[in-house]
Image (cartoon, rainbow, N blue to C red; front, top):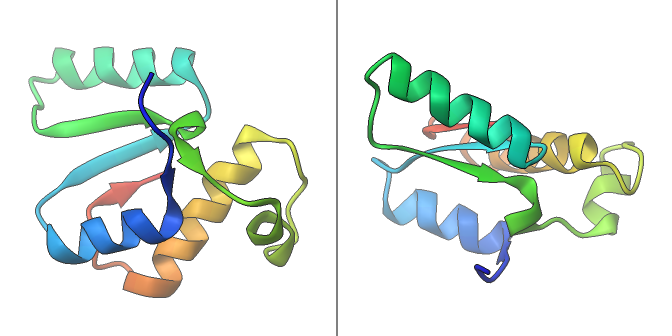
Length: 94
């Protein structure tokens, strides 16, 4: 199993590697569906990850007024943190 990345590690990655294109989803079923869709459309070079591979601290989730212990809240919190850092200038979808 892959080691979970922190939000700060992801911010650094996207700052240093602006061509990286990633999608974060709630779970493995969503990941499989998005990967299938991308392959059917012939789109490559996009990585799809379950939010379980990102360490989203409860404090960050609460800071944004989201419910704890929800993968949806984790995805939203990650997207908000990335937006605060990069505005819309990053190739990440959540």
